[in-house]
Amino acid sequence: MANASASAKKQNKLLVRFNVQNFKYAKYDPDSGKYADPTLYGEGMAKTIAIEPDSSTKSIYGDGRRICSIIHDKGKTVNITTNNVSEEFEIDMGRKILIGSAVADIKQTKDVPFAFYFETSGVNKKGGMPLAKTWAYCLHSLTPPAENLQQTTDEINESEFETAFTSDGTLLKNADGSNYKDENGNDVIVWQMTVVPGDEGYDTFGDKVVMPVMPATVNGGADAGAEVEA
Image 1 (cartoon, rainbow, N blue to C red):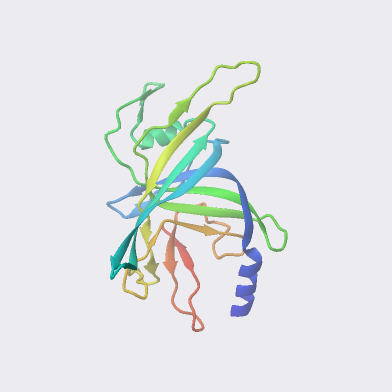
Image 2 (tube, rainbow, N blue to C red; image 1 turned 60 degrees about the horizontal axis):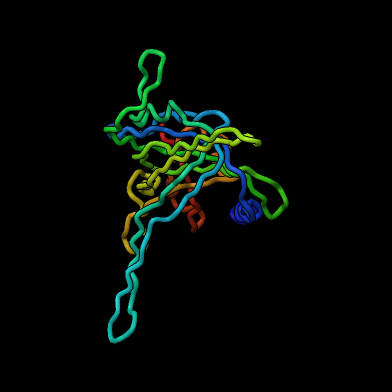
């Protein structure tokens, strides 16, 4: 059974990833420690998503040579480009407000953490084109979208809107709810998690925020796992 699962995983491995679609977000409530139900980040808005590491390395020298390097991994920065601004998202982030039937931009005075969801197409080893689903955890959006509006000339000039996020990630948990520790006793922070067809929970992965959980050891080895947070 374990060999069959490993074989399926190997076949599902994505060789190429492309396209992006179906942006969603889910607000996080620090009091309850839960994420709300996902909200669609506008319909037909997704254009690009860029995820970049925010890390640096400090090299330590002794006796005239490098003896070790210390990695300072501060998380990731996420930049999305969309066809329009999501008014629902901007209101939830505290940057817009409804005044009657009008929407007004306001000074942002709060920081609302959230999870962000997106899907990407791919090509696997069998020549199929599976859809990969990803949740990114504990993001913050502290600046409003950059708006680039252009006049139409001989060609229609398409407008784009860029929004930046930063990621704090979330702690990897054990099946019993305790913090998972690596071989050196450190907590493990997960920035994002991706599933492909054949993975457990794939069909409903975008319906709720799925938190990373390391399952109990099965048959002498543990596979990565996840569970839906209510």
